[in-house]
Length: 443
Image (cartoon, rainbow, N blue to C red; front, side, top):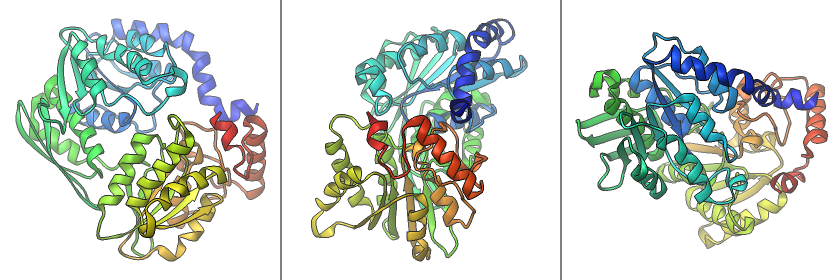
């Protein structure tokens, strides 16, 4: 019963897949023949790119929609025949999944955001992951469109194999749609300027950072090249400019006392860590604080990975609070200390509540606090606590994948109920409440 409580959606999706897949396959071919399907895949930036692509073509978008299995089939079945566009995010976690998704969706447009940085353990190598990711863009026929990240070598190589028309988007010279400018104006947004076949496109994004600007550029290029908004650049730019920051993805939040929060707690793969800490480092005139958790799926030696992480954090922040296991903290701290006399203040917090308590005296104007951690750590609770909301959940590791804390019924459970939930998680998963389960989880 505990597995059903904590992993119910995933279990239900697995059980429903053999039933809903044939129905969705038939619905796509019979009822949705005139509907154009845009599929977004990649190792990072999928949800933001999906939001941008949906805005560019005028399709609905749900930031909390699951991106795998029977959830994809349900997205197809819920699409009405009169809709011109269906935009979906496609995620994989093990070999063999993408071929079935490509057959189900039969996409007209595929956007490939990046390759590498997550799910490397089940695939064994980045090359194997790239082969699996390539199945979707290579499934697009000659009349379709493939948009690839021009700044990612593996994406460019996959694009070179496609039979469909390929549009390369990025900062790199030679991109079909080149990002000429992506200037962050914290905390207002990012000024994006694109140059491509249709001329220049200026978008005053409310999103923060160069990487999210590139996601917006993917969506804009796909929409314009595929005929979204009638190929009208100003209309696409206006829709992108109206997009609100996505939850837990470089999300700026005002805090009591005048401080600001940069909440990026959705996950902590290496590319996303680089992106978030890069944004923090760029906010030069502010006091910069980072609340950081562990690395999601670190490649190679964990000691080397955490030391590199520490060096990156030391360049970005003036104070660092690390929430995680003692072993990881020591590895991380070794990297921070390599900054020498300029190394920022570093301390370890036992959990999200301790981190929030340690920051109470920092909530003053001119301060920005980055919150970044693994999805299972749910460090988004730090943001809720700093905003003055009640958070009674004390889980150190949460197995509810794909769920933001704001949407969880246990967030404001009575302390006794939260303690029972914590014990259930520890018994079910082997994660205990003092952080000692981290190493078992990583193995």
